Image (cartoon, rainbow, N blue to C red):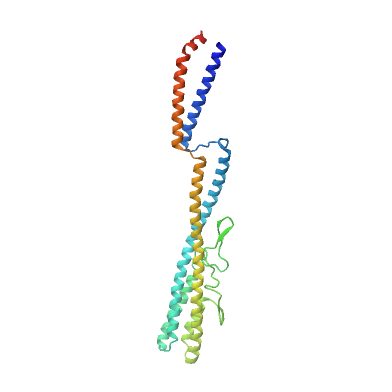
Length: 285
């Protein structure tokens, strides 16, 4: 009888200890807002959560790269806007200079402005980025990783924009092309001037069209960066939601279970104390 009583007492104490442990764990889950405190709690969820965390870490790095690249792309586009505006004015002046309605003094004034714009173009070609490097490098521009095996160059190369423009007279720098136009409209011989000015106007129109193409290319690069940023923002939201479902504590459900277990423990302790009070005295006796 005593052994049986002791067994029942031990079993009830063990049950209440388990309840107490479950209550403590529920309180911890609520406090930490996570239901997984060790991998053994849910191996499958833990493994998936680790995959998500790795993906989030990679995407955080790529997003930072996109931010840096986007800043460079924005500066490049702003600079190209200046080039476009300048080249539009160059074309306007050359069109006026070749109409034959302006005198030598007018053409000299046009030439002065053209040379000033050539100098401006030369300065724009040397624009530096935040790292102190050329925004439009001579060779291929720096490719920035923005995904797994995905790279984007945030700005175009100077080749084909400021340098190596293919004209009928051979490759020219953009600044040189403008200076040649200024020289052409200042020629004193009318026939020679008209011929040279017409050729220079063709080169200027070619350069204007080429600048528009290059700016379109720059716009494509910026759009790719924007698309990648939006994709990662969406991915970050989905990953965060999945991670929360995998390891996050369902607070209302856990609180309800906690309260139920606490009530069970309180009731069990009260009954245990009342029923076994005399039995405990008998055992001690």
